[in-house]
Image (cartoon, rainbow, N blue to C red; front, side, top):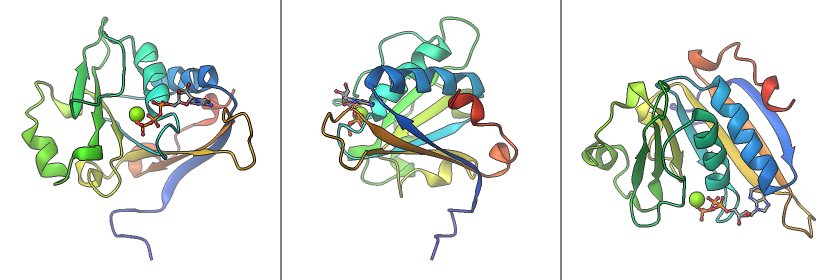
Length: 170
Ligand SMILES: Nc1ncnc2c1ncn2[C@@H]1O[C@H](COP(=O)(O)OP(=O)(O)OP(=O)(O)O)[C@@H](O)[C@H]1O
Ligand SMILES: [Mg+2]
């Protein structure tokens, strides 16, 4: 049974990504359809490519600072170099208490004005918004190069109803 905070997806798309470069490109394309206040949750095992996708997203948004694995910090704010939204990149891996702790981080930024990307946020940050884009990244079965990823994007909530994700697969 689905948890009450996981409504049926408003939109979904499945893609095969063949290299880290293509994952970056997917992030750059994603940046074009994201708006201030959007929440993107990235799911996938260690080394799946969550940060690689976020790096492309940061490039696409035109934000300051390299997007890296926030190993020693839980969240990092990348301000826009132009007039776009800042990117808030969260690694919720060590965020035990979930949302409350996230709010306690006291980020010097307004989440509704930002694009928020969360790695390892499942079961922790859903309450931030009913409108979410879930991105699930898996290593392709039987891929001996360890370069192929299956990516599933699911938009939840009114924000994503009728959204056109096909620009991501062009
Ligand atoms: N198709 C691909 N997409 C993304 N990364 C890939 C791909 N193929 C190989 N890689 C490599 O896999 C690694 C992915 O690392 P990355 O830090 O992005 O993963 P992650 O999901 O953020 O891991 P973690 O859970 O540790 O934060 C990189 O070294 C990258 O070069
Ligand atoms: Mg990562």
